[in-house]
Image 1 (cartoon, one colour):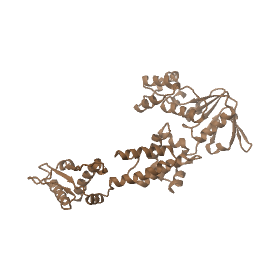
Image 2 (cartoon, helix red, strand yellow):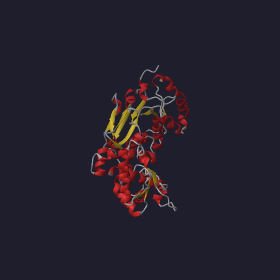
Image 3 (spheres, helix red, strand yellow):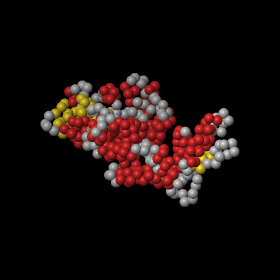
Image 4 (tube, one colour):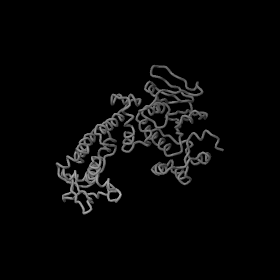
Length: 396
């Protein structure tokens, strides 16, 4: 019988919380009722005698406790059940279901969100303001599943990530925040979603990378006629290494300057393409997708010494590649131009085209940069995109 009692009360409380009555906004008393058959679809079936008896027992138990109102029909059924909206009764029902009153939940959430609006993080502030509006409109709070401590942990992580001054591994960050190396992994989906939606990030998948949170050691690869000078007076001639060199981002701050003898400098999105890339008088740099603050610092050290050089970025011909290009230009201030990210390249490698998804089209349409409008129009018309790695193949 307990099972049926809980099912009845759950349906009634769900309907109660969907109404304005639970918010105290409705000045006119409105009853909260539900048809018994809506809860138990076979309640009125002639063959469902056993079910009907059990449901009736549950209804009569709730009637005896004064928690519902219901009238018995001539065939001994209860067609409709109405919730008794007395404060004492409602408190008993919530306690029986192990649920929290909507008004109490709203009050607690308002307190948390109001506190974090003023914590000096733009993305968190935007999120909190939007959720406070949602509460006013009786809407749900995003990324909240009933655990207040989890919500506060998510917001604290967002703030801590924006304040990272150096690259940090996922598990080290988790230990620092929670004293638990695996806790962050449990929350990372909600954290990345929140930061992507309310922050200034071009790709949800790259949010942590842009902020300097990495799973494994991160390296900047450089090849070409370049010399790296360290703050301790030592130097490294990259031009003497045919395959170039990988520099840990942890060592970027030790670099005093970077001198490039080549005429052009090209940043490359994908590692395979970096290894395959070979052009005379060009210095190639692999940054690993989106450029976080340490990778930007490396580029700025190059630019400080070589501002007169030509700068290019070579990436995927898709929305992600265009976003990475724009992010690179915006965050570094370096006047990059796109390299082989055009209609001619698409045509050349037509056998390796991939079809656009609906999300691809939406993201392409959001790009307003005049640099890519011609290629974007072509991509949407031809329903195509191209991964950079395909260009290492023979597209003739």
